[in-house]
Image 1 (tube, rainbow, N blue to C red):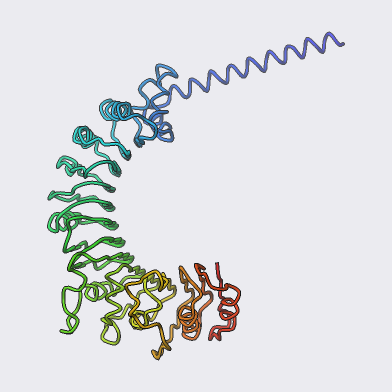
Image 2 (cartoon, rainbow, N blue to C red; image 1 turned 120 degrees about the horizontal axis):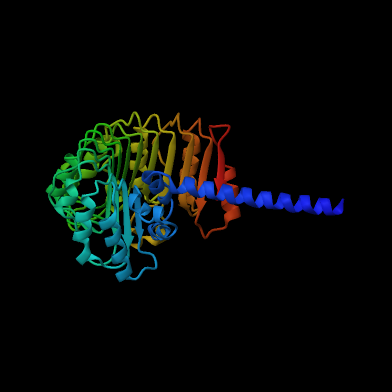
Length: 426
């Protein structure tokens, strides 16, 4: 019986091994017989270096990487010479359409950039991301603008010259770039279906003119003398505006004329989310440009993010006038900057008792960043609690040097019109 058991056991083991080998062969055959486009999709989950290495698996996988629809080239630990070789090989030997192209690196590739863009333009990519950050700006060659089906373009450290736009482009991001007023205006207006635009750290642009009928999301950061918008479908607008030399207030306030910030706010009356900060905006508030003269009503505005000096009574008063014109506001976030951080504003008056009567019927959540626990900040929180009957939460992100427990005691003792309002200090 024991001998019979050993024979049966050995036979079973042999059968299992044979079945496993057969399964392995079948699986291998199935993988090798996959269509080239399926192999390309599989390899797209690897980085390019690993994908190219699969060419040693078998003859059927030798050129499989050349059908990858998504190409992501990361310089990483490559030497400059090896990275150039890799990029040249991928762009030269790729057989199909590159649907998604992404390249990034911290070394200088100015001598190779034009060649790479020419080869890329022949592959008809849809999304393109180019982030080569070393050295001077890369000048975008004209043939990149010949890609008719381009849907998303993300450029960093580039020069944008006067070219035609893209008929299918929906997303455009330009970071740390250089252009001229007319060039950037022509590019944007020549993208008829553009919905998302990001323009940060732009050089050479004085008067930014954005005309995009389909635009829904806009993020602008930089120094400008003027900004004009003609975007009827804009829903989210983010601005960080700093001083350009001799351009903070090009029109004297004494003449009772609108500054470009007021004009800008007037063109944003239909947005749902608004974020605005920077030295230009704060100085505009300090000069009292809004107050009761501001007649634009933000009927659709639900979320607002503002960077102000809460210790400056004029900025707070102007901010309240702005908020008063947003009857459906649900979420408010303020970035509060400590007074002792801004020595050049020491002549400003500290916040006093606000006489402006307000009622923010729909406000549900308020957030104050860099909350230092100073009296003027506590006073402002008290005002919010007295203005908002539907308020559920006031979140204060602590950044103070005062006695935290004492501040918490003051905050918890504040009266509130909303029975559900909570104060959370993080």
